[in-house]
Length: 84
Length: 153
Image (cartoon, rainbow over all chains, first blue to last red; front, side):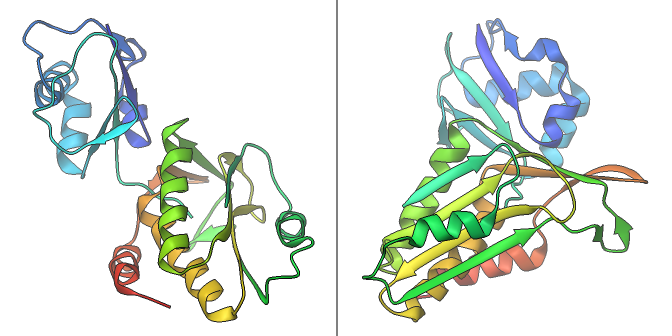
């Protein structure tokens, strides 16, 4: 199981069941995970396509989407930030 | 250096006074307070909600604050940022700097605010009569952020 966190507007589009999911066999990397989400939840996938999306793996920014994901990981999807 | 996320409304004057109390070594105290407006681009705002990513948000704001502190040789910085539901008139953010001289303190506060606008893991959602909308940084915020990268005191 992995924990998925959808922040900001992505949170409005992600169904509650997507917070904790069993990794499908074909998902080995962050890029695979992003593609799997786009197939499973097209609305969310399109929103992540349209806007710059940062991924955070276990609380660290992940620029390299070829990084592997495994059971127990927490992956967050961040739309553009708006602090201040 | 102090970074705090506030779940409830806070008093910027009280926070600033506590931050500067007893600091006779400092010759300058500069502070900026960002407030929740009742109107944005002609549309009225009933409420602002700021979401955060617990743990990561605090860590990232801490990193931005440390970077600013090093760049401007300004070790004493304070950031208090609201999260959750905010009403018009309430403070959203307080950034304050204590320094020997004013130039570093002014620059540190200005640049840290520019960083927070685009790089702090926070997400603003405005609700008004027309419904809710997520706020994203404006083109101007990105320009200021790029310029801030180059600035030195």
